[in-house]
Each structure stands twice: as C-alpha cells, then as structure tokens.
Image (cartoon, rainbow, N blue to C red):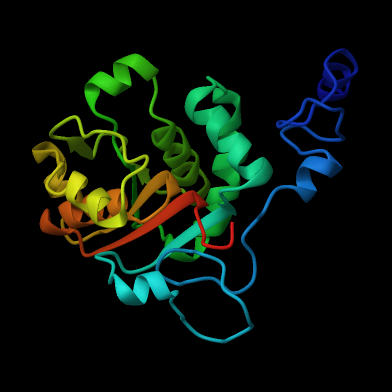
Length: 238
C-alpha cells in the first residue's frame, strides 16, 4: 500500500528519458528498443556478441588474437544507443540512482561466473581522479553484483600506482602499454584472495587493457581464478 501511495505522488519514470513507466527503475518502450542487451551467443572470454548459434565455449577474433589473462568474461550491454547513454550518465552525469538497475543487469549477465566463494572487486580509479569525480562508477556496479550474488565485496582490493592518461584515442597497443604495471593488489587484501576466485568489474570494456592489468595483478597476488564483467562492451558491430 505504501508503495502504491508513493507511486501516486511520484510515478515511476524511465531511467533513460524520464517518460512514465509501470515499474521503478525501468525503461520505456522506445528506450528499451534502443538498449542493446547482449543475449544469445557471446564470446566466453570478453562477452562480445557473436553471430550464429554455436554450442559450447567460443571466443571472438580479438580474444583469439590477444589471449586474456582472465578465465571468462561477460557483458550486459552493447556500448551503443540507450546503453551508451546510461553508462555515460552513471560515469559522468552524477546519476548514482542508476547503479541499482544497471548493477542488476550486470549481475544477471555475470551470474555464470559467480559462486558463494567469489570475491567481487572493481577496477580502481586513481585517487586524484576519484577526488574529482567523487565516486568510482565501477565500485557502485561491483557492489550491486556482490549483493546479488551474496559474495564478498572488496571495493579497495586494487590500487592504481600511477595516474594513467586517458585511454581515449589510443590504439590497442598503446592502451595496453599505458596500463602496464599500473595496478596492484593492496597488501592488506592479499590473504583474502589467496586461493579464491575473483570477479573484476568495470563499466566499459573496449580492448580489455584495463581489465587485463587488473586480472594480472590479482593473479600475481595469489587468486585461484579471475573472471571479468563489464556493464557494456564496445563491439565491432556496435
């Protein structure tokens, strides 16, 4: 009853455009149609959508050409259309209210990678960027993923050792070089991940350079297995 009364005063609105919708944290019809949820066949390593209906674990051309240090990966959305709009709103638009629905979408996509033993952690921001932005969007998402899975969340598992320049406009090789040795596991958390599976969460995966640096650092610190999950995947056909 209380929820019904609240909806009379504050009716649910589309999280993308603000149009009236039937439920909280939902999308209207037009925005839903412009949101590219990744369903069906996808790369087992990075979550990129793939054509066809093959069975078993398959990988995209990029992952075959550039072997990943992590075991498996998933993504919830194409980085295009409404999906891109929502990612940017969370990342740069102070739309912290989006963490819950977007994190829920990511949790569903990442469900095959999670168990009760999995430790969930975000890709970190450098402290100077965190001061400017005031929050880490990847940490907001990883919190929701851990909550949905009932796993342990370590939002400060990783630290950026240096302030890396933006990846925008860089070639794949330059992106990997830019992140080389830039991330590390905090010493106080090394014992917590030793012999445990770890899921690393980020908002967007492009080449996978940032997630590769994070995965390598976690493996070197003693994790048994590392998987990754990104809210949105930049795909060749996006």
